[in-house]
Length: 226
Ligand SMILES: C[S@@+](CC[C@H](N)C(=O)[O-])C[C@H]1O[C@@H](n2cnc3c(N)ncnc32)[C@H](O)[C@@H]1O
Image (cartoon, rainbow, N blue to C red; front, side, top):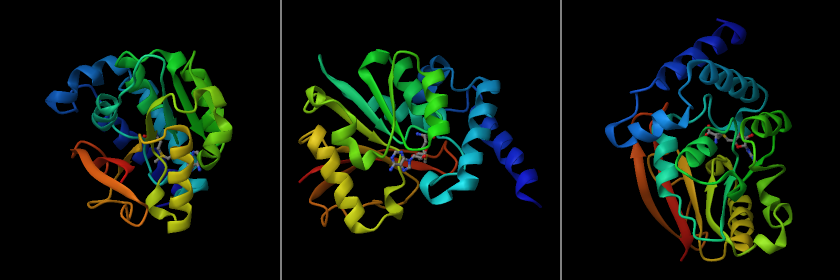
């Protein structure tokens, strides 16, 4: 079977996983509120995602966007105090971003960073009011204005860090620490165990959530400076 016939089939499968009611009980209200489960939007998201995956699978790290169940878990783990923002790295089609907004985060308090320009354009259209930055998350201190350094409540990472060498992972940790000192970051992953060698990176690690209702099942880890 050719890639061009396979991709629409995977997109349809991903959309089925996004149908209302496909989340577990604790995720249901956010799933319905997020709008990420609208069939038309789901197919458009999945198609864009697949296209990017076909051109750069290692950078995408996944064939389909995260499910509403996973996005809901991430949104509920996100903490943001008065005067702080949330930074999402590797926002893709914006499914996590929309779950954050559906949970009540004001768009002007959300900054998303996406390296693929077509994805970033899509995010600008889909996330009015949010700050969408086209760029490399490893340049984070340069990408967000200095007056926001130290005012980041939560950093969420969708970048497949597990595929990177230790030195790159260390650079990522330093970039996050520069803008959100002491806070660490949330990382969602399909790995069964920690996707990062956290002790070597000077981090502590806690698996905060696991959901089977994702393709494939996924965990959310919180890494902090040890
Ligand atoms: C697994 S996808 C996650 C997308 C989306 N957040 C979701 O849950 O479906 C990873 C995303 O990270 C982006 N990405 C990869 N490396 C990046 C980097 N260095 N800086 C910013 N974005 C990056 C990819 O383009 C892709 O959109």
